[in-house]
Image 1 (cartoon, rainbow, N blue to C red):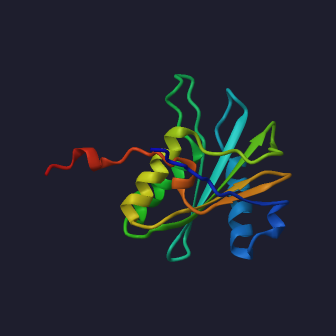
Image 2 (image 1 turned 180 degrees about the horizontal axis):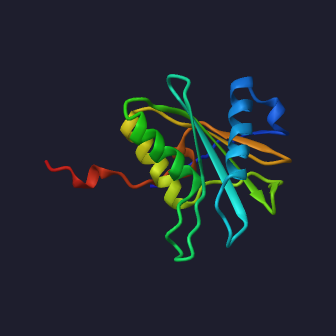
Length: 161
């Protein structure tokens, strides 16, 4: 048996090609990145999530000298949303990264840890989370975290019966 896995990524030349709501979310993620605490890597990441009620929550990476004690921007934003708005699904997450205080040319995708957290969020809320990856020269839009991590781990192995 052969199984084919396909990932669909929509690419745009710039943020200006996005819908106004998505454009605003992308700009907000970039502003969130500016506030990141990244004294060691100098690589700042911001994430902004749009909740179903229209509320927007921001997060940014927080480094720590006792590596790997830091936390990624995506997990900060998703955890804040889950803690403060537990019944509101996340519709969209925008992610932007700054290298030396400048938006990266290419979009930066979430690490494996964040991808798994995004999958868990989708499973918990029983709906996909649109992902916008922002770069200076390109913007990528993915319809679900499952596109980023198709062979994800879920809790089904714990079920009995």
